[in-house]
Image (cartoon, rainbow, N blue to C red; front, side, top):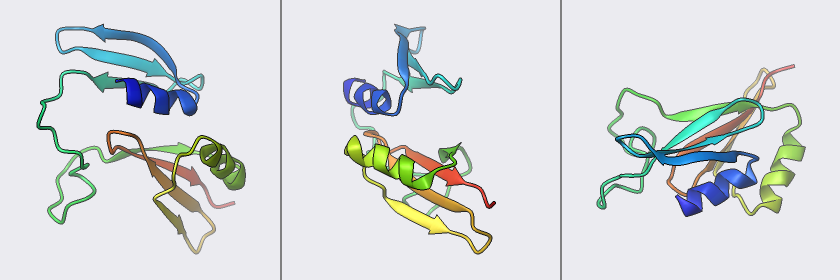
Length: 116
């Protein structure tokens, strides 16, 4: 959890507790109320890809979280200052703008500015 914890610390999350429970998890929470639970007992052979996004065969299920933002450039600068790379950007004709990063475990996080 060390690398993931450091990553989410950079995004403003606070470590709450862990490991806890019969299937051990750790919990981090953002001041805005977003709570993330991390699985701590993954198999040693766990894949390093998010199968819901990265392979041709698609599966039903959760793919990523999306965080609504107002100031695209400010968020990009904050991520850059933390050495977090943007993996993709998308701008739609209606003016909405999205960009994506990956955490150390390969999970996708979307930052979304709605159309004005």
